[in-house]
Image (cartoon, rainbow, N blue to C red):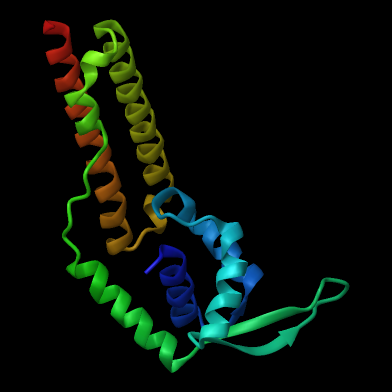
Length: 177
C-alpha cells in the first residue's frame, strides 16, 4: 500500500469525515513529507481514486463564504478493513531494503579516489545536516509529542545517526586507499 493511502485512511479513521483541504492541512501540520513518501499535492487525486474504489465515500458538500464547494469524505467499512490490513502489513514487513551505495562501492574503481572521497564526504555532510534538522525539529515538537510520536522521531534520528557513523567509517577506509 502506498503511504498516501495509509495516511488518508488513518486521518479519516482518527479525525472523522473531512474535506481534502483539511486532510492536506493536517499533512502539512504533521510535516508528513519529511517522514513518509507523501506529497501533500498528491492527496486530492488519491481521494478521488479511493472514493471510486469504495475505500472512502463522499458524505456531503460544504461551502464557506466565497470559497469553492468542498467534498467531505468519510472512511467506509472497506476502507477500515484496508487500513487494518495496511497496518498489519507494515508491522510484518521486516525487509531490509538494499542501498545502491553498496553497488557503487563494488564499482568505485571507475572514478578517481579523490572523487569517491569527495562524494562520500558530501553524502556524510548531507546526512549530518539532516540529523541536525531533525534534532531541532524534535526539540521544537517535544512538548506536543505523544509517546509513540517521540518513538517515531527516535527512529528517524537513529537511522540518520547510523548513516553518519557508517559514512565516517567509509571515509576512514577511503583515506587508507
